[in-house]
Amino acid sequence: MARFEINVDTINEQVRQLKSSVNNYKSDYYDYYNNINKIDGAWNDNNTSGFMQVLSKDNQEIIENMQSIIECSNATSDFITSLSNTLSSKLQVGKIGRVKYDSNYINGIIDNTNNAIELLNTSASQLSYLPIPPMFKRRDLITLLENNLRIISNNLTIPSLNFEYIRNDIEKMLENSRIRINKVQIQPINTRRINYRWKVQSANLKAADEKTTKYNNEINNASNINIIASNINDSFKQATYQVNANNSDIKTDNYDNVFVNREVTTDNSNMANTKKYDNYYVNGEINNGISNEINSEQYDNYSINREVKDNHSIDIDSNDINKNVYTNTGIVNDNINSSVDNHINNNYNNPDYNHYNANTNVQNIENLNINGNVNYKSTLNNNNININTNNIDEHSNLKSTNISDINLNIENNSINHGPSEMGADVSSFSNNINVSNINHGASDSNVNVQDFNSNINISNVNKSSTTNPVNIDDIFNSTN
Amino acid sequence: MTPKDAVKRMLSTINNIRKNLNDSLIEMDEIYKKIPYALEVNNQVFYRSLVQQNKNDILAQIRIIDNDIIPEIEKTLASF
Image 1 (cartoon, rainbow over the protein chains, first blue to last red):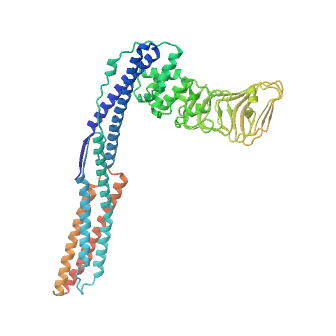
Image 2: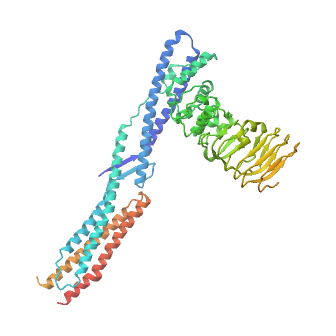
Image 3: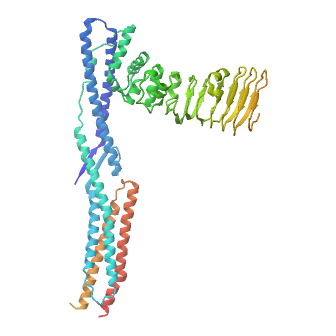
């Protein structure tokens, strides 16, 4: 009989203590690590080389110890989660508190089932050997009863076997749990030791380029900087900010997403409190203008990385990008598919959208260059898409293009065609265009606005004063 | 063994079988009550319906014994 009892609260408390220890250690470690780099960057005295060697050695020791704690903590936490989830899914127990399992319970079910089966089979056997006197005329009733009892007996084997399966599954899980419990070992570590040994907070940093470079290199070479993955403290934020601000060739290949994202936290206090790792990452990279150098291949889910990588011309202001672009889950120049409203404010200059399928509120895009299938499914509220003739001349796709299926559902917006140069033709070969509030700015002369289209609804087309007539051809269903 | 004794013996056997079926019903009730609520709802429904169906089947067999077989045996006995 398998019996199992575990106080989840107790183990959870152990995990909490472990994690608290890890976090304290992280904080200490980071302070210390930061100081190492300060020293490293500021110190050019040969007499300090020994000191630096000791620091480096301690640093490595901290990293190793901390990794050990983290692994221990994670293993314990994983175990508790797994155990709690599995038990609660199979038994009527909560996830917190005392979890009990007694196989007597389920064994009782199995025994009852098997007893019932046995009784039925016994009865059927007795019937089959029943000496039926010749004068008993309803022999068929006996045969029918026997057959029915055997059918019921067979049917009962299904729950019996299934309950046995459940029992075996639970007991196997419990055995695995015991093995995992035995593997968890808590390693006490003196987390304060380093701070006691070295008091380097007062080290002065000199702003020489050489030392700055050295500082950054130290950060880059510290491959385990990703240990600082949670509970970002002030010193960490500050330090990582410096890293990003000063260094343009951070290699992130060896970091997983979580750590990298946190690592690149900026000094934005709001971001420091959020759990959205992609925000961290985006802000960090963008803020510091190092997007072109980021190897972002492994961050497919965080589109902005790809976006930045593939579109070097996008210049995004950090204040806006903080909350706006992380929800893009596609790649510019390929697909942007977003079910979430995106707010891209102000800061796109000359973006190229080859395939843009997004429920997006786009505001204040200048010099929009659109190539291909464009579906703005969201309304463009209070936007101004300004297309100047000079730009149109530069971007021939806007001057004359084969755009199909453009749906511009524009409310309270306007498309302003600025003053056109002489002889500029604005034409579009399009289908299914719904455009309202088109304002043609004052033109010099001979501006031909031609729409070789069908199913075009154009309303509120206003022509500003022009020196020469503007020809608007082939406009269907137009209202003015 | 006289024919009458043979019929009596058959009646005794049938009564014994009927008792077995009653015991099976009790076991079924125990199974039914012990089906864990922590199982997925679909599984709970499945097992309960299965046990209930088996109970119904056994009850049907008891009714066959009570309503058809035993009266028939008693009728045979009475004919002696």
